[in-house]
Image (cartoon, rainbow, N blue to C red; front, side):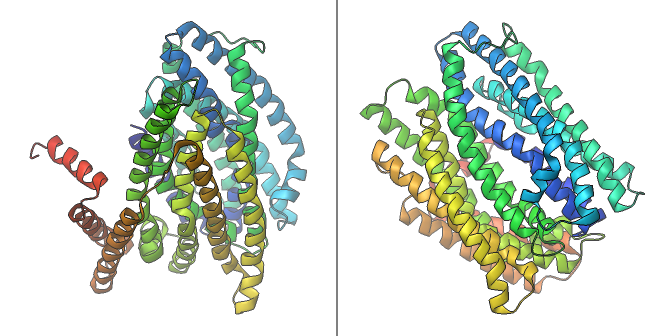
Amino acid sequence: MVGAGILCSRLFGLVRQRVFSHYFGLSDAADIFSAALRVPNFLQNLFGEGVLSASFIPVYARLLAQNKQEDADKLAGAIAAILALIISIIVALGVLATPYLLWLIAPGYTGEKRELTILIVRILFPGTGILVWSAWCLGILNSHHKFFLSYAAPVVWNLSMILTMLIFRHLDANHLIVYLAWGTVLGCLLQFLVQLGPVLKLAPGMRFRLDLRSAHVQQVGGSFLGVAIGRGVVQISAFVDQAISTLLGSGAIAGMTTASSVNLLPVSLFGMAISASELPTLSRMAGEELNADVAAKLSVRLNNGLERIAFFIVPSAMAFFALGNVVVAALYQSGAFTSKDSLYVWAILAGSGVGLLASTFGRLYASTYYALRDTRTPLRFALVRLAFTAVLGLASALLLPRWFGIAMQWGAVGLTASAGVAGWIEFHLLRRKMNKRLGPTGVSAVMMGKLWGAACIAALLACVVEYYLPNYGPIFRALFVLSAYGIVYFAATYVLHIKTCVELIGKITRRIGIG
C-alpha cells in the first residue's frame, strides 16, 4: 500500500516536472523556483515526515499495541498542538529572515534573480509549514496500518501545481513562477485536508491540548530532538550541494532538480516505502527490552527488507548509468527542454546512481535504530556524511572541471557522485554498529553479484534494442527499451532463483489465476 501510494504520487510528480520543464527548461526562472522550493522544504524535512515518523510512530504504535487508545489519542492531540505552536513561530521567522537565508543557500544569485527568489521563498514558507501537519497525519494513519492515503495525498499537491501552470501558461516565465508559488501553497493545504478526516475518525478522543508534562509526550520530544538534529544534518548536506551548484552557472541547479525527480522515484517507491512500512512493525517487535530472541527476529526482518530493496534498487542504479538518456528524454524532452538538456541531466543522474543503493539501505537501517529508540547513532554518522559531502563536493564540483578543461556546469555531475560516496561511508558505519547489536546483517555478496550480473545483462540487451530501434520519438523509444530491460532482468533473476523475484512472480500469477 505504501508503494502504491508513492507510485501514484511520484507519477504525478513526474508529470508536474515534465510540464515545468516544458515551460521553463533549464532557464534562470527554473533555477529560481528550484532553489526557492528547497529553502522552505528544509522546514518540512526538519519537522516533517521523517522526523515525526521516527519519533512519534514508535511511541504511538506501542500505545495502540497495548490497547491504550485513550492515551494514544491524547498523545496525538498534544503533538499536534505543539507542532502548531512551533511551526507558526518558525514560519514567521523564516519569512522575515529569507534575505539572510538566501546568502547561505544561493550565494551565486544576485540582482533581479536574487530578489525574485526571495519573493518566491516568502510565498512558499507557509505552505511547507502546512505540510508538517500532513506528516503528523501520516504518522497516525501508518500506525493504524492505513498506508495508501497518506502516501497518495501528494497527488493533489502535484495537481494544484500542474493546473496553475496550464491556466497561467500565457504569462512570461518570471510572472508564471509567482503564480506557481501560490498554486503550490494551495496544494499543500489540500494535501493536509484530504488526510484530516480519516485521522479524526481513527483518533475520536483526540483533543488539541498543549500537554508538556505527559510522559509519552516527553518520550516523543526526547526522540524528536535527536532525530531532528540528525535530519537537519542531512538537509544541511543537501543545501551544501545546492549552494555549490549556484556557483556553476545557469541551469546547474535546475538540472540537478530535474535529475532528482527521477532519482527520487526508486528511492521513494522502494527505499522509503519499505522503511516506512517496516517502522511500526519493528517498533512493536523491539518492545521495551532488547534480548537475544528479539535481536534475532529484528535481524531477520531487517535482512528481508534489505533484500527487497536491493532487488529493485540495483536495476534502478544500472538504468541510471546505461539508460538514463532514454529515461530523461521520455520524461522531459519537450518545449524548452532540448535533447542537449537531456544529455546533461543524464550525466547528473548517472552521478546520483553512485549512492542510490547506499541511501536506500541507510533508510532502513535508520528506521531500525529509531525502533530501538536510538537516535544518537544515526545523528553521529549523519555528521560524518555531512563532512565528507562538503569536502568531496567542493573538490568534485569546483576543481575537477578546471583540471579537465570542461565547462563549470559539468561540476554538477561530480557533486552528485561525491554525495553518493559520502552516502556509502554513512551506510557502512550504520551497518557496522547495527551488527554489534543484532548480529550479522545485510545482503550476501553472492546475492548482490547475481543482482548486478542480471542488471548488466539486461542493460546490454536494452542498449542493443536502443541502437537498432527506429527513431519515432523519445517516448516510443523508452517504451521498448525499458520494457526489454525490465523483462530480461526479471527473467534472469527468476532463473537465478532470487527469492524476491520468485515470490513476486508467484503472487502475480496467482492473482491472475494461472499460478
